[in-house]
Length: 473
Image 1: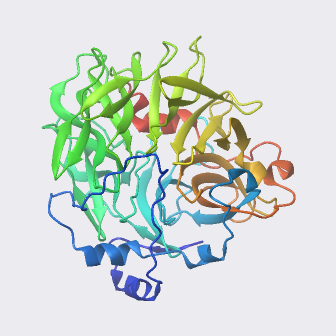
Image 2: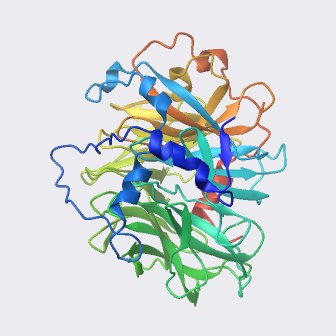
């Protein structure tokens, strides 16, 4: 289990880490045909940030990563397996997931606890918390006054800034429960930097959530404008209009929706300022995958049964989820050059999502089974989907069920079920690092089907928390 550091604890213990880690930065790699614009880095208030502080934070690094042999960046086919780092959970929580990571390998995780044995439940988590893993230490990000925080992917950029959402200590005057923990406290988007969490503004409403931040400091997510959403059914707990938002220079700017869609959320933004997400109505009976460029919204191709864009890279490639033509399931999707590619599913799986893509075009995502439990984490490259459990050694005590984001080094933030030992059945956050060496027998060979879990790993539960359905909350 990793060492844990509470946000409320004395952080002086981090100083030796800051002074002892080699100050060598890894440059972000972008394909040469992409016109990347350089930008002075600004914080959320629009002011120049203290560059020395940024450099100190950026130069945190995981020393054990230096011992890992990385696959050649120009030859993805040379990769034969992954090194597995178990990031554990916070405290006594029974589930944790590595939602995102930057190009240095710094990993942002969301942590929670639910009643054991509720694998198929679509319910309320008992608690939730965001954290960052630095040098083998879990640092609790804290909250904005309430008990819980969480994230929609949550992106951590190469400057160590993280975004997400947190409860405050104030009850929502309209009885909403946007953070989703059953407390009905107001839920605010946050920016975490320099060991401090700061609330971001909304569009005039009480609630919002931040989903991603790029290396230029641009943040996207959604925020309420305070108006009642007429597309919500009468019994909806959360019934205020939620608009996609770009936060820049400390201000919230509403992004347009497509067609007559009243609501939306932006889930990711690349370093060129291009954002992706979805627009929809309250109950998701209408749902469009959307990309935003220079404040203009464009609907992406689908089969008339709904789609969502979860991520994009600096080459204009977009990944997400698309509903099947018959509307019975959904699969991972890739949009590029005005075309749609359905990634398909691993044998025996029922549905899936593609959630992350790097500039080499490597895609990661997750499939679920017919009971809507997360079944397999996958990587898709060169037109082939591969179960990540076939790429980690059988000596690993973990079974990978969800892969979320992939960085330019090919490292993957993931989630796995612990196979045996004191934490058997619990869900741990995982960091995978590619290694150009044989793994021998794989976990997939050792465990043909995923082991039983003590915590809910239900696809609908997580997708619901990612705003795919709020009508019944």
